[in-house]
Image (cartoon, rainbow, N blue to C red; front, top):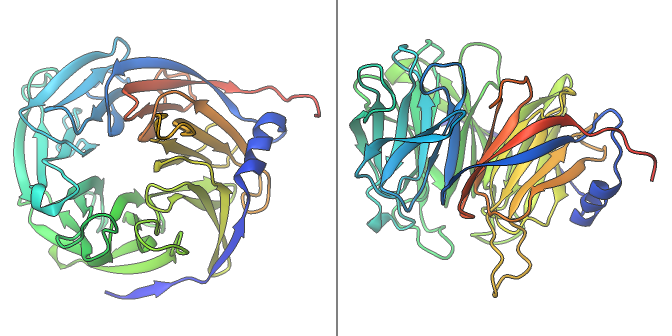
Length: 412
């Protein structure tokens, strides 16, 4: 595999500075959006996604839980729960796409997950609706089993119009707590039909936490951003079908000032920002930093926006306030306990200035009670504004309705 890396410049903005902005920033060119929370379900979730499961034009919600033995979805707007797969345990992630073109998406999901390879079967499945009724039980096909299969995504890697399935392992079989850095982890891909396993990379040190398909380059191919102990990697496929090989470009080593497991990146996202783009991450793995990257020539500038996340997990990058600049949503899965009284559970949102590299980001914490593992964007009520749907170990699935932007405040 061909690997190249970028020069990295680093700047730091202290967390307290951003907290001050939450109290004093006005609207101006980059007003913050307002949100109203609606509880969808009591659910101790791990990951969440949205898709139109019944082909009625509305986005529905799917969340998975390591503690439940089913796969289910919630129908918008009543939030009636439909169980589509039973008898599976420790479901860690899912990816949704209509791969057969019938208007009802298929679901790839991973079950029998554990943090220790010896206890993790790592089963990979495709679930498909039957008879045109997505509320009834679905058929399932097991396509692979590999220990610690942890994150799954659909992407058109070779640009032929047909999606491939991506499977990122959490760790290699020899990696163990507390450092998880004794082995190398792998990313696999599968073509539709035979679902044969191909390899994107089998030499990523330590933990891989997330893989995100993106449109980084012009053309019909998707590329992959990967968050791991190595930092943030960009993968490009070369060739077609079973002959594909992959080129890796290291965008950043992420948080690299401490030993494992406080290393690299926990999640990564990309978004349009004016005429350019930003890359954003939570660093290190399950870490405390919200980081934005902006490109200057051939180098990427690393700017730490916030350092007060209790336990970071996932990130979402999308324009929430309709100004053409991608904003950042960071989840916090920490929980307030007697041993951790200063935890900051919830959802932290950072609204971009016109210049994300040097300008002042506006901070809002839109959830303060429920620990959240992940959020995704979606227009749940068809009002033209992107909402947020989140779940986590706080025991809730919550829809945060985007009510539009705050009005400009008087100078403070």
